[in-house]
Structure formats: C-alpha cells, structure tokens
Length: 212
Image 1: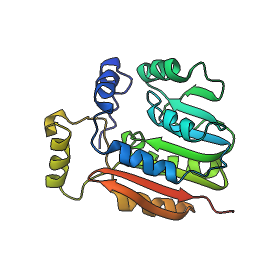
Image 2: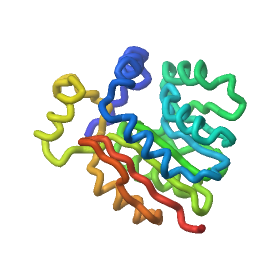
Image 3: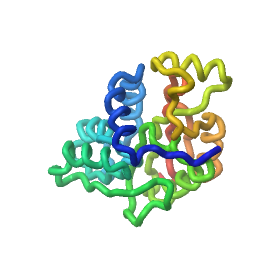
Image 4: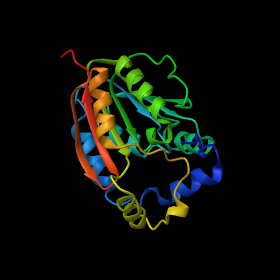
C-alpha cells in the first residue's frame, strides 16, 4: 500500500473541514466515546486533533482536566490554535504521527478520532504500543476510527453514504479491518478491549491499561 498522505495540503484539510460536521452518525460515536473516559482523568492526550472538534467535546465533559493536542497539518494546527490556543489547559504540539511520539509525560486517557487510519499498518501497531506505554495504570484508550469494510461492495456502499464515488476516496486512507486492530490491542497488553459502537466503516475501539 503506497504511503500517501495529503494532510499537509491546505486544500485537502479545508475540504475535510467542509464535510466534517456532516459525516453520518458521527455524533453517536463521539457521545459513546465520552461514556468510556474516566471521570477523574486529570491529563488527556488527543492524537490527531484536527481542528479540535473531539477535544472540545471532551473538554466540555471534563472541564478540570488538562490536555495535549497533536497534529501536523498546518491548516488543522491553525484551526486548532484559533479554537483552543488561548486556553491554558490545552497544550498544542505539532507532530506527524508517522514518527514516534515525542516525550509527553504520562496520561490518564488517550483519545483519537479519524486520524490513525492515515498511517501505514505497521505504524498503526507501533503507535498503539506507544500509547500503551504513556498511559498511567488504569488509563483508557478510546479510538473512534475509520476501519475497512469486509467487502468491496460494502466499502462502496459506505462511500455512497458520504456522497463519494470510489474515484473521490481520500488516497491518504489506509483502512484496516477492525478485528486485526482489536487483536493488536490485546497482544500489546490492553484489557477490556472491545468495539463499543459501529456504523459501517466507523468504529469506536476502547481499551484499558492494566493496573487498577
């Protein structure tokens, strides 16, 4: 699979932002994600924050927590700074997830929304390992992700629900089936690994680092 990533392009990022709020059933996945965050979490990492949509939702649910937000797209970082740049509880870090995570300290929860599927598969697994290592014991990883359909027909049906043709699909996508990713999380050492919500190719994976 070619390692294409168009997210450094301003036009590509702006096109996503134009469509982001209209992704079907997205709010269902987001609200389910919030259910699995520990209420006493003090420090939360948002991996691939984009313009800060998920970050805003988590902050509203957990107003006393502090946050670190990662992204590498200049356009997304600009939008993220406009939305959260004046908030002292949010640290915004420019980082490409294709590279190892920088030293960020420990976290009580890590969240991600529609970001990790842009990485090649081997890097996806390595990133899951890095997330495991930076979580506190008992910490939670919630990943609302774009996963692969079981068949080409189902994939094309999903694209149609987004008013896209196969030719219009984002070439940055590197979709992987849900089962493989859940298996990886278990192999890494996460507990309570499960898919808590799914609509077609959109799925919420949750897992917990042992220790509490």
